[in-house]
Image (cartoon, rainbow, N blue to C red; front, side):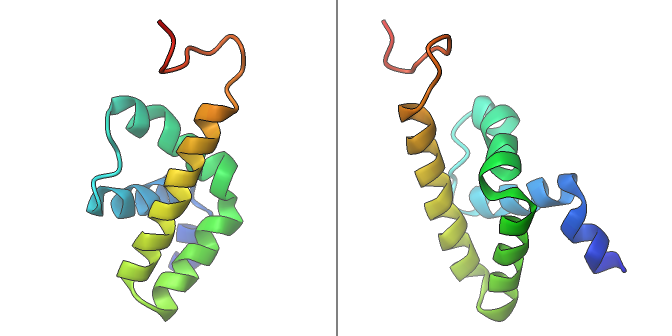
Length: 94
């Protein structure tokens, strides 16, 4: 029962992903921690994606799961920066 709750509990999903990203120092600033990471878990990975990543870690190793999460995070950040809405502030704006 505890395992099922952990898989569907949103805060637990964010904590799981955040822990892996912290292992490799991928959360650069407060904006990453407060806004991008929750969006990454909620919209990019979704509940199913986090579940698959947990299964991957369980059946391989934590290092493998961390590498997958890191690659997905990097892809998410690049995709997010290239598909910003017009009213968002881009990092390259002067």
